Amino acid sequence: MKNVMDLQKMLKSAKEMQDRLQKEMAALRTEGSSGGGMVTVVLDGHKALQSIRIDPEVAGREDVEMLQDLIVAAFNDGAAKVDEALAEKLGGLGAGLKIPGLG
Image 1 (cartoon, helix red, strand yellow):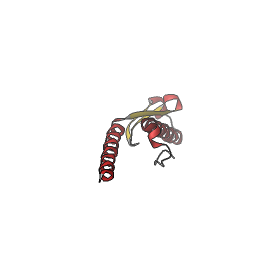
Image 2 (image 1 turned 90 degrees about the vertical axis):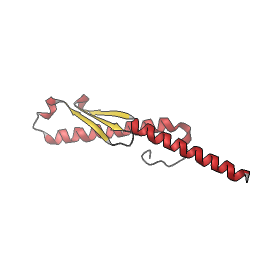
Image 3 (image 1 turned 30 degrees about the vertical axis):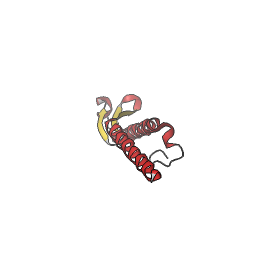
Image 4 (image 1 turned 180 degrees about the vertical axis):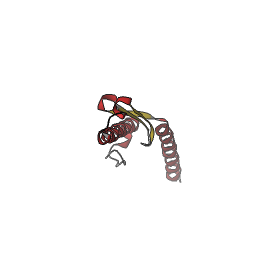
């Protein structure tokens, strides 16, 4: 019976830790940029785009393809920073675990 109680405590603790991590990731904001800051995006910890800033100088250009590439690059930069923040928060806890997004 003691083992069952210990298991229940451990599961409850893991659930609380998961809930706390979910809240922290929702509140997390990372900034990615490209083109020397011409395009900047802000992502939350779930990699949802929160905002985007485009330097008027680049927006006025006729090269829409370049602007699209800069947006993608800025988003990818921000997403990589979310992964880094998550890995830092998990620390050694995630060692050996396959966590989506931390490939």
